[in-house]
Image (tube, rainbow, N blue to C red):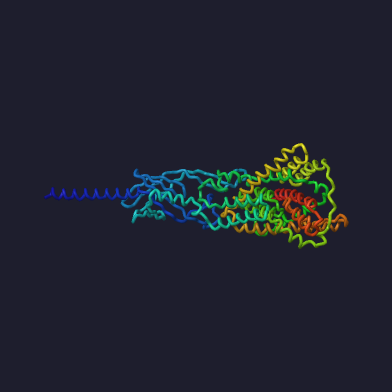
Length: 546
């Protein structure tokens, strides 16, 4: 009887072991079949985001997939926001105890050193996640604040594909900015508004706002702000200020300064139009921008895109640290887009201002034809001009130096090939690169901010003020000039740097008033003076604000 009882106990114990082993095997088979996926909110779509550096208590978050893969050999892989963590697991009934291995992760932090080429400081520390316990119930894994559901490999692959697609990452901001890009392209093609600028910029806006996967500490190397991407490498020409001097080289090689040399007093009109820069600077400070940011915004008043990009790359690049320890905003994109937008809208903005400030009698004033300028004067002008302006504002040397160098190539008569290269192939290539990268920098999450709206409002006001300042300067000069030497005040409006569009506007308006009154050559004098004036103004601001 005793032996029979012992045998019965042995059978019961053995059956429990067998059933337990079968249960554990069943749980393990369930775990290792397919992938366990959770789709939940809580991921910050800013590659450089760090909680300890955040200025906002509740940053914007998005949904992302988190995938767990369990292997037969007791190992697992956790794929969270494309960062893989490995480890070992043990089964305890329907509980899965997970222990993570150390893994090297990439941490991206915003670069605050303007001498570095990259937009990020990259660190690669070793990280070990804390142990976790998940529970399997009703074909779901629960724990660590997530609910994982099981899918086969093909479905999991489709989820991964979807997460990288634009459909999963699109926002209203992307759609708004793409509409802006369409408007730029439409204006360029339909109305011929600065097509060589607006088409590259408009298409760049489309490129920059194709939605892509973004999350903290993840670099897909696609976007203009992601180091290692082609667009980011090209964008360094904007951030580091390489493109604007090359643009000025081409402008100098294609510009004839004869009208300015023949009537030097018209340079005062180019200076008068720069009032828009300094009033906009004061307005930006009033609206709460830091002085370096305000200085970069002010240059929009000169209607000079390359100069605006150059000074914003120095003052409002998102890298310079202010005295109170804060970092200046990266305003290169909004400033560049505002400057080029208003340059393209010269035929729309300037005529009403000119008509408002002048009478018909003034618009009918005929000016003396400009005198002939000798070759010696043309050759000496860039040399003397460089020395005078560079001594006044050495900080503007990259711009005015290249401007006068290009003009010397043109006027010397012995470097025609170099002048032709600077005035045609080189400036065309740089214009393409500048336009496409400036456009791409208008990524919705960077561009659509209250600061951008303020910049566009300030830009519109500054352009009107600059135009009015030039016209007012001409009217003031007329008070001191004899009747036969009077200046048609309309040419004062061309004192802004939009060469030669502003001069063409004055020519068109003059011909409408009197078909025999041609003002183009007269208007070119303050127009090219405005280019020099805006560069000098930029140098002065840099001297005060760097």
